[in-house]
Image 1 (cartoon, rainbow, N blue to C red):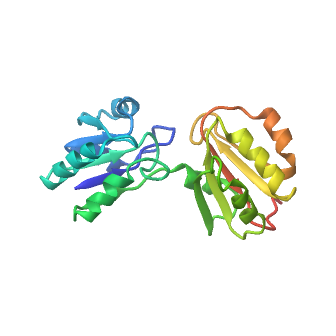
Image 2 (cartoon, rainbow, N blue to C red):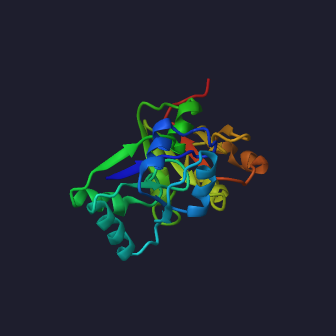
Image 3 (cartoon, rainbow, N blue to C red):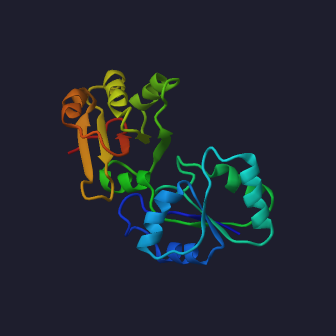
Length: 225
């Protein structure tokens, strides 16, 4: 049985009792970064053995974990932060487990995109999640789709590319299009910033380039007040 376990995105208190119980009772935990996971393990006295499984793990490594599942062992998959597979590695293991008739059990919890939507004040009944904003190909096409869309668009951006992406949005979107940038979610310096596409330059002057960013682009016609 494979458990896909969500862990906190920042605040270590954001983990469920069920997640802790599961991590304590499986035979092995597969972590994107074992060193990162040990911080959480120390907080909750999780003694289960941990091995690595990440985007660069070999097919042989994948096969080995599948064989362990087939032999009746219980494994838990965790990412560095939040819900595994949501813009994180792990898809191959879950997909192949299902393909081979193995049971996969989700243990839900935090994810940055839903956390941002919860407190943004932008419409959350219908939205489009785009993962990380395209690095090159498709950037302008995506911007054009957002111009008249009736849906909130949500995507992630790294500290190294956030300024470039916001600058592109300012060029491609109508000046009055509302943008929300969420950073340091669930941490001490959690911050939600709101501005129009035409105000991106002013926002970038005061932006603290730290952490991972969630960017939300409001639907066509949305107003802050």
